Amino acid sequence: MEKKKQILSCIQPTGDMHFGNYFGAIKNWVELQDQYDCIYGVVNYHAMTMPYSPKKLRENTWALVFNLIATGIKPESIFIQSLIPEHAELCWVFNCFTSYGQLTRMTQFKDKSAQNKELGADSFISAGLLDYPVLQAADILIYKADYVPVGVDQEQHLELSRNIAQRFNNQVGKEYFVLPESLYTEVPKVRSTADPTRKMSKSAGEKHYINVFADEKRIRKQIRSAVTDTGDTPEGKMSPGVQNLFELLKASEKMEAHAQLMKDYEGGQLKYVDLKDAVADALVEISQRFIAKKEELNSNKKEVKNQIKYSSSIIRQRAQQTLKEVKDLAGLMNVKF
Ligand code: TRP
Image 1 (cartoon, rainbow, N blue to C red):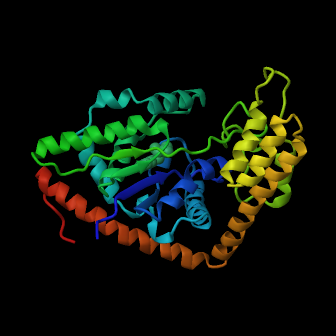
Image 2 (cartoon, helix red, strand yellow):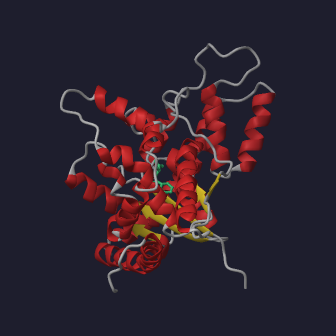
Image 3 (cartoon, rainbow, N blue to C red):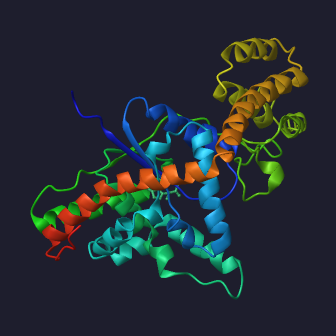
């Protein structure tokens, strides 16, 4: 049997999971599990690169683990980055194969340092923030990932990972690392229902995102108050708010309702309340499923945590193997394990 291609992706622990995250990334991760060998990391080392609170970091890390399982990721595919310290050690080795100038030119580094400056006098830009993409390269290459499902905003980081792999291969005179490719899947771009000109995100505040674990009442309220027409959409064009509601319906795989309501729209007979009800029904159906699963997990918190510590230890063996080979190739002595 042919070996399945390796998929690797990671996510930072940053609190609530919303429908933008779910439809835009996690749902795709869940589906990829049928076809590929998948590893998904909760990258808590990365979450230290911006000002943060240790207590929140610990809470958010576990919360994200539970959320990922509740939304359909297999526990055995999940690892917590700090439980696999080899990532940080490989990052060091890779630092010596990374151009400092290239790191300073990374868009995300420039954006985040600017954000930090705006935060005020006691903000500072850590070397960790500059080094962030090198740790990301370690996450990817330590599992010899073939494909990395990410958004287009991560292309620069993927390119850097390939540059590092190539420079390492050249140095050691061997095609040791596979060059990882980004995997772009056509995913819905979900927008804020309160302001459909911006994407659904937590940074803009509570009304700009719908939590995938929100209760029915809250979801219905948020959808009922969704912006539809603002009066400034040109004649014959669908307003961003209505488009977004249709997009949510499609993302929820309610194709029949979608087709019917679209027909109403084209015939000039669409009642927004019908569209909103259909969207709310669809989202509630999904969230109810997730809530039930999460309740089950919450009643076994300890076991779930142990399961993830165990899965991390199994995934770690692969990381240890790669790091051992890398150290041999790089002229470093190895610890026996
Ligand atoms: N930088 C990624 C993001 O912001 C998160 C990330 C860290 C990642 N390590 C990774 C993504 C490895 C893919 C592979 O979304």
